[in-house]
Amino acid sequence: MTCSLELTHRHGHHIAVTVAGSGVELLRYVYRAEDPWEAPKPYIHPLRTLSGRVVTDYRPNDHRWHKGLQMTASHLSGQNLWGGNSYVHGEGYLALPERVGSMAHAGFDEVSVRADRVRLAERLTWHPHSGELWADETRGVEVHDIDTGSGSWALTWSSAITNRREEPLRFGSPTTHGREGAGYTGLFWRGPRAFRDGRILSPGGEGPGLMGQQAPWLAYSGEHDGADGHATLVFVHSPGNDHTGAGGTHPAHWFVRSSPFAAVAPSFAFHEELVLAPGATLTRRYRVLVADGAWDRERIASRVAGLPW
Image (tube, rainbow, N blue to C red):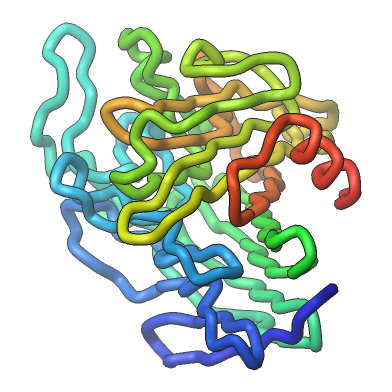
């Protein structure tokens, strides 16, 4: 059974998507600029299940720049569009504000709501700390396939990032710069504190040992504080994601942690840098299934297969 959606736009601040009749706000897409130290960029928080349970965290005390679900770039040609301290090989994490850049909202080309689908089409600009234009991004965020029978709904995120410099943009991560097992960059989810030590599943594996591995999807289940029950988020990597700008596929290398906090990112630069030539465009598409309950592998695989790209 599907549901109707409603959209509320607080201009200059955020867009909220709500399930008609239930009053449950599924997400809030916030696009106003925030603290420069936290690498200002749009983000989704809160993100909720159909029962209204929040499944994201915002500005936790261990990493103030972790904000729900957001596109990030932890190492970008010497700049940090992730936020906070920057990793320097041999020295660890250092407070280097001159490296912290931003992703700025430039406008919406589409903000539409139909009975069962919401679509946002946004233009953004990427900047180093000094403010020059390094990249343009066109971004799509869609809410769809709300299914009360399964207690789940789907979010599809697409980003097309075009290099506007006269030299290559080098996308990396702490791992490409010398820190083992820290390949975080790209679309990043920070889960609630209650989700610490949750269950991690992929089609062929289970547990934190999936860090740095490839798989078409990865799921994280956690148990709520303050309310009985669990929630499951399934992160799905589009099979058509382009690695080089010249065609072909590049399956995700998953960054995933359940301790000391819950986090997932389908990293596009885990083990090696991704180099984007001047004028070239890096395209990525992801899906996030948000579900009430602790789903098993069979149920996840069936739902993922039922949502073709």
